Amino acid sequence: MSYDSRSAEVSAAIAPLLTQFAAVAREEHITRAAAGLGVPQPTLSRTMARLEADVGVPLLARTGRGVTLTRQGHTLLGYVEQALALLERGLDEVIEDAGGARGKVAFGFLHTMGPEAVPGLLRAFRVHHPGIRFQLVQDSASAMLDRMRAGELDLCLTAPLPDAPDLAVRALDDQRLYLVVPADHRLAHRRRVRLAEAAEEVFVCMEPGYGMRRITDALFAEAGFVPRIAFEGEEAETLRGLVAAGLGVSLLPAPDAPRPGTVHLAVTAPRAFRTIGLAWMPARPETTPVRLFREFALGRRGRLLHPEHAQPTPRDPAPPQAAR
View 1 (cartoon, rainbow, N blue to C red):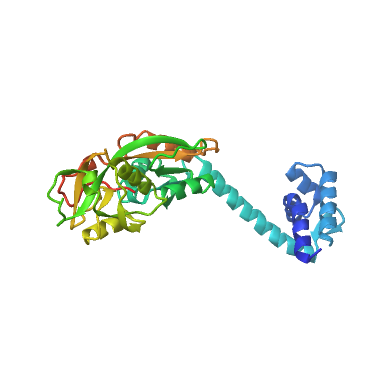
View 2 (tube, rainbow, N blue to C red):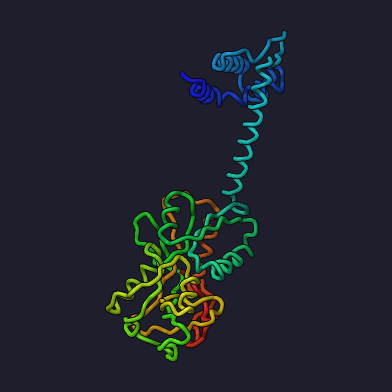
């Protein structure tokens, strides 16, 4: 047996005994330590004998009715006290995270929900629960669901709504999608357009695997054509920049801030929108902070996106709320 494996084996054997060893070391008296621990004195004496046998060296020197630590005992005590202090800090954090007034929520959301929708949601929630902390994760819909199943996320804001038996999903809001064209495009003077009218255009789209890509692919199929795709990206604003540069057209939600050089056209057929919803693992134990935030988010149904960002004017270069 190697030294490392022997140490691991001994560590596993003596771990339950360390609190009692530390108590004996502090009291330097078996009987007083037993009283403080609430265990019989003979039991504690046997425990210390077992600890020394497991370690293989003497840790305590008996001096009349008391005990003192040997050199090896002093060395071990230093590490035991560090380990117990670290364990206490870990327990404090776990208990705090599970508490109602203080704690942490691991929350994932689509990149395009980050500029305004999610900050607005968190600001409104923290008015009532200022002590709850958040770990925020922005990723693609499929990656967020994988991370939630792996236990890295408590909740995620996603689109399209996943259909999976292990998930609970509730719709929160619908968000309109627009055909985004360069300002000098042949369709830029239009107020609205049928998607089929763009069938011969070159498109810039989200990469496969993103929720937005699944939604737009379904809309293209419903409109009766397969798009010619010149560029694929991970960020809606990057795609919008490609459109402004005249490199293609795109189907995107409205942005939060103006994007010069683009025009957003309402799509009349098919109906172009995406439903944004909240997903979580119903079979997983839920801490109080997670429950409070989940209930609050569900209570914002129909109000997740800012009301003033509902519909942009057809030629407004800075239409409202964007989300991926």
